[in-house]
Length: 149
Image (cartoon, rainbow, N blue to C red; front, side, top):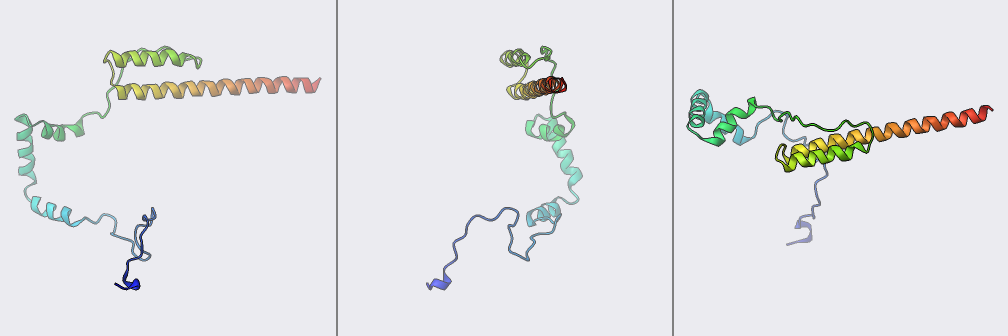
């Protein structure tokens, strides 16, 4: 094998430019071969396939039931949990303890608890920032009052 016949070493593709210059790739909305073949096979059979899927779901096929029902179900459930009122940043400790207790008692799932904890942390951060702004404003007023004397 000659030196010129060896393939040049390839590095990772540059993100955002997967094709060579001048080759824009497949047009948006175009389908790959597998999708076209699948659509051709199903054409005219859609109604019968849906009826069969419903029949399977009614007969206890859980995956089929999930497939048919999931578009109609809410993605998240509403959670009713008594949390303490957050007026100062330190109140976040009590709120996080209440969330941990609800998780341990099985009232909410760990992922729901994590989402609630994130809200508590954001609220606590917002309270802290508002407190800092108030303190800075008060200090500026005191400095300006001294300068005026």
